[in-house]
Structures are given as C-alpha cells and as structure tokens.
Image (cartoon, rainbow, N blue to C red; front, side):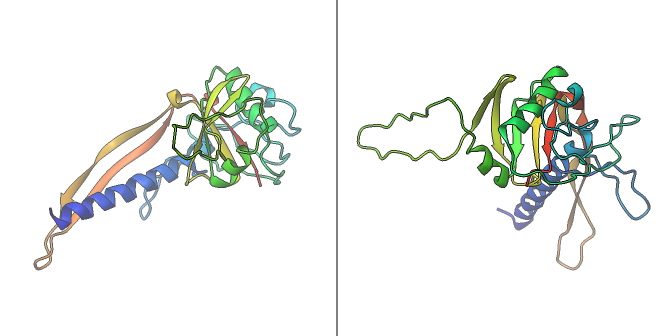
Length: 227
C-alpha cells in the first residue's frame, strides 16, 4: 500500500542475495578499515587444507579434493579463513570420481555432506553422470508425459545427496555441504532507520551486520578447478 514499504522489500531482497553470494564464494574475512567495512569469509575459503593431486585419494581424509595439482586452499589459522583459495590448473569437466573423492573426504571427518551446490554449468555435467537407476514417472490418464533431463538426487557410498542448482556459485567449484555445520549469525539484525527528510521526500536506511559461522568446516568438502 505504500511505495516506501515496497522499496524496503526490494532492498531487503537485494541484501539477502548479496549475503547469499558472499557466503558461497571464495571471499576472505577481513577486519576492514576506515574506508571499508568488515567482510566474512565464504564457504570456499573455510574449506581448506591439503588437496588431492592425483585424483585417486581422498586427500589424506582432509575434506577437500581436486585433481588439479596446483590448486590449494590454505588451512584455517587462528579460527579465521583469511587467505583466498587458488584454483590451479583446470583439469576438465566434473567427474563422478572427483565428486566421490570430495564426499569421501567429508565423510571420513564425520560429516554428512547431503547437499551439493553447483552452478548451471556443473549441474548440466552432473545430469549426464551414468548410474544404475532407471527413471520412471507416473502419468495420469489423459495427461501428457514428461521428458526427464535432469537429476535432483545423487547416491554415493557416503549417503544420499541433494543436487541443488545455485545461481551464485562459481562455475569452477562444487560445494559438498553438511548443513548442520554452517549457520548465519547476526551481529546486528537488519532494521530500517528513518533519515532526515529532504523536502517532501522520506528516506530510510537499512542497516545490519551478519556473518557466516563455520561450526566445523571439515564436515564439508569441495571440488575445484572444474572447467
């Protein structure tokens, strides 16, 4: 009923998208400065440690794997992910073997990586994985049949995993996440604050501060340097 309420809704949606993008990217944590704000580390930067360089091991049970020899994510120090990952040499399309290695790395550490986030590029590759399941869909009498060209679930030795298309993921990374060990916490909940008027114009400020909480980054994993 009010244009100011609509404007507030639009701006809050923008903030939510910005926050979602920040936590799924390779953003690092910074303390900020006089002219810049603080930043929270994204999940890519949290999931660190040694990486598999030969594509045949689960990186010594550390929850990160890649077949790109030079890819690396420095391990977390002092409870903070402060160094951005390096993708390294692109090794080609995502493979079921690389994905299984990442899932194994998280599982060995006690995680249950039941959610797999991927960009549209990697989702199309995952949809082509060969499997042993035959797909059937019940069709009501008189209804048109559906053509199935995508998968929403991936079953590995390490559990059932939901494949989720995510528009803010980098195309070179696939995240295998245990949602129990990630959270968003608000240092200042987002609120609106009315500012001084300029003539007949009413202005508001939306202010808040949130951070990504990594309760145990080893419970998740990733595949990096996918082309």
